[in-house]
Image (cartoon, rainbow, N blue to C red; front, side, top):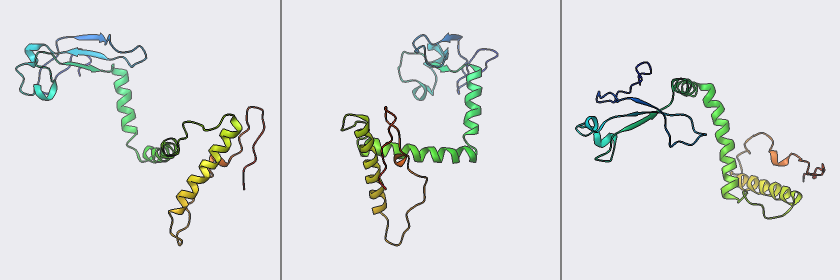
Length: 168
């Protein structure tokens, strides 16, 4: 991508025939894409066409972000490769895995009961069941893994300001 000349060069050395504004088919909330088009005369005789575009009669259209967005993407992708970022992501990955386990393994996307109090009790009992199931997989000589306190055991006030007692 040559932002100064407003051209895109393909791996085979062909230069796009013009740069067009934001893609008209993209939704308004999507990031703006700059669209570059290659002509039929450039694409049809190309030996790498089958790896580039599938239609026989069609031209190749390439969308890419504006320069500021592209520079931001490159900077963020570089930062994501640092050890600090990988450590932060490992924590996030564990939390998302637990959320996924609750949603898909224990049906926590839908509540079985009506009312915030009953729903809260369902969440607490499900968390207890998950902890028992996880601990049951340990051998008798292993110790339970140390982790932060479960948020399910933290008393949460309901819509009336009442906190439900947590079983000890």
